[in-house]
Structure formats: C-alpha cells, structure tokens
Image (cartoon, rainbow, N blue to C red; front, side):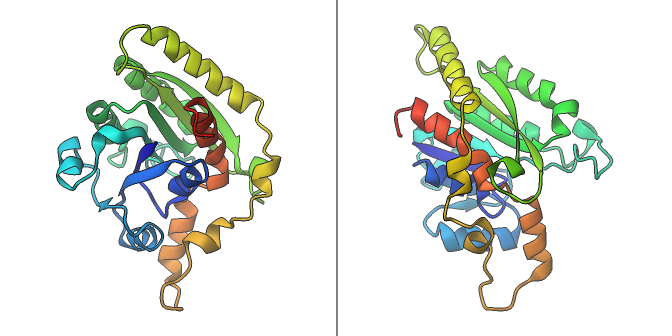
Length: 246
C-alpha cells in the first residue's frame, strides 16, 4: 500500500505510515531544510517542491506509479486556522487545502488523511468534508491530543479521514459504509499504551544535524510544525488493519 505525502515537513506522517507497513511513494515539501531531512531518511523517495505545480502528470513523468497510490495524506498549513494567528481561514493566501483537494480529485486515492490544528474544526472542517463528499468520499474527523500518546504537551490536533470506493462501482456504497464503521470502531476502541511504549524517538530520529552544527532556527521551526508520528499512527494502523496489511 502506497501513500503520497503532501506538506511533508520532516516526515512525521511518513514515519507513522512506515510503522503501519505503508510505503511513501513521493513527498511534496517546499522548505529546503525539511527536504534535507526527508532525503536523509528516505533517500530513494522523490521530493516535489511546490504543491501548486504538482499534478498527476508531473508525478507520472517523474516515474511515480500514481495508480498504486492508495492514500493521499498531508498536514496542510495551519497558520490560517491557528489561534496564534489572524484566523483568516480560506481568505488567507496560505490556505492550501484547495491545492490538496485538487490533487485528491486528480489521483482519486482510496483513502485521504488530513491533519491540522484544533481550531480548524471550528473554522473550515465543514468545507473540507463537503469538498470530499462532493467527489464521492465519506469523511470522519477525530481529535487526538499528543498527551494521549505519551507526549509531555497536550497539542490537540484534528485528523480528517475519508474513504472512497469509486474504483469499484457495484455495491460501492455498502463497502464505503463498512469501511467507515470499521475505522470508527478501530479508533474508538484504541488503546494508546503500546504507542507510548514505542522505542522510536521522533525528534532524534528525524531531526539530527547533518554536520554536527545545528541550524537552530530551521530545526526549531521544523519541529514546531511537525506532526507527532505517534499521534497519527492509530489512523494508519486502523487503515492497515481494514485493508488486511496488519
């Protein structure tokens, strides 16, 4: 099972996907420092810089097997929704959900996984779910705090998970409902104990310096924007179980 990772940052989403047996087919990340981190840990995975120019065609021309991509995931920029900002939402030029939605519409993956700050639920969650439903996806949202997976800070995050069985027309509605119920059940009954006990440590694994001299500004910015992999792992684990990978 393969995934396209958008707004990849330093790879928190892809690390969680790796734990669930899901392979990243390509990254899209604009920050040079983050690209270095991704290239260090996933040296064979192509990196595309700008989501505004990323298309199904450009992926295919670079050798990415788009037909094998079952998941499009991304932590799209949170600044338009963060309580620390001006909360302009879709009026903010950093609102890149429309670009992510365009990619989803072009590729039509089976699964979509989105991540954002908690305030996103108050501002743009309805629009996001409506967009996805307009092209045949059934979506659910979940709030998972980082402290529930062993982090020392609360850091609530909203996760949007959507499923479509558009590749299988006959009976697709029933299958979509079954997948939705399975996902809800997996996450509702989820015990986070085993995640807290994971031996992998996020910050040292993904954000070590490259020459012994840390670029503190880039490093701190990247860590501040990063998805905590233990936080999103239950979603990928649930998807992997539903799809028979685990």
